[in-house]
Length: 240
Image (cartoon, one colour):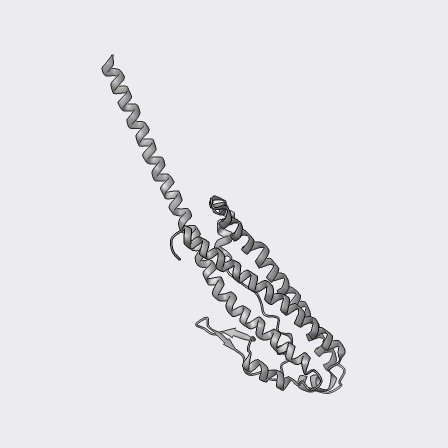
């Protein structure tokens, strides 16, 4: 009887130990997967930090140009605005290597006054973690809340200011189109701006300056939030 009891106890201990080892192994795997996921999210944020710094540089240059146009409104020409842009660029494209190239050729374009500058930070991996439930598995509430705030409230605020900028840009384009249509012959945008600029256009530019200043503040706050969360992640997870 004692042998049966002993053998049974040994079998029980063996099975229990086996389950414990398996559970520990599965737990370690899950922790490793979550760790890798958070690190990858951190890398996405590092990429957004770089993107946001360049974007902030562009928005500040755009605000500076508009401010100079307003201050010198009566004597300002598109040619002078082009010169300001050459030294403080924001209109750009991307070459085949994905690098930014700023425009220096204008061809009678009033875009220096109406460019709205799209806002497109990366959020693919955040959305993957959000929809898979991995985001909720982050036990550090401070990190989780900061991540959620960055990808929702802060990004959305900058997006909202970007949309307002675009609405203002559309109004400025409409002003140029309407002014051009007053003539029964071909006329240049440079001529229109030099000879037909009025208080209505100036008011739109003043509004634009205020929008851009608010956009700069929101973008700076977003950038600071990104940098703070990257530091938090790097202190608790593998180094980025």
